[in-house]
Amino acid sequence: MIQFNQATSADYLPLKSLWKVVFDEKEPFLELFFNERIFFEHIFVARQGDTILAALHALPSFYHYQGESYPCSYIVGAATVEEYRGQGIMGGLLEKTIGSYTHPVVLFPAVRPYYVKRGFFTTSNLLNFPLTHPIEGQAASIPFDNFHLHRIYLEATKERGALERDELAWQFLLMGYAAVATEKSYALLLGDKAVEAMAINEEGAKELLILLYQRGVKTIQVLKNSPFLPLLLESEVTYIPMGMSSSETMDGVYIAEQY
Image (cartoon, rainbow, N blue to C red):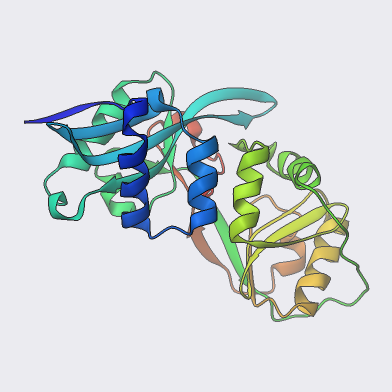
């Protein structure tokens, strides 16, 4: 009989092993996550006897909206042992998790239709533009730290809201993405794509676009209310769905992949 319950400290090694096998994670990330992001009371597991068949981490988190901060739980590491997939185990685990909280449960989906069937909805989209029209001018990137990026992130997302990021969340992001910044803007880069670009005004947006053109970046993803838009509207736009929530109170809130 399969039981759904919360993890304990005795589950540390099986949980780490499950994550490593399912996600083929690089060792530096794995060590940092399992040293710094372990909250056993917020890890939900499906067990058969003493064996963990599936698990997910519902990280305690917050999102901001119009100057206020609200609690949520952010699901990462949702994984099922290969031979037990397709049996409804993860669906039961999600139901257990959502029922354990009175606040929204959010995630960044690997398979979006799976979560739609379980009551999650996409809270926001990014606008994806090709960078095909160089902008004249000069700009220089600056040295930055996580606090600088975070200040821009908060200002750029204050109108519609966003999932909050602590120092460790920024550290994880910069393990997976390159970054470039000006005083008033930044972009997270994956190859020739700016997968997240934030600016607090049009001046910052223009400076960042100049830098991205210089670096050979081909596409940029920005918020709907972004100061980049006046500089990009001549280009064809596509929409990139972002994170999902169990509660429609989070409609419009920006949720990206993070840990």
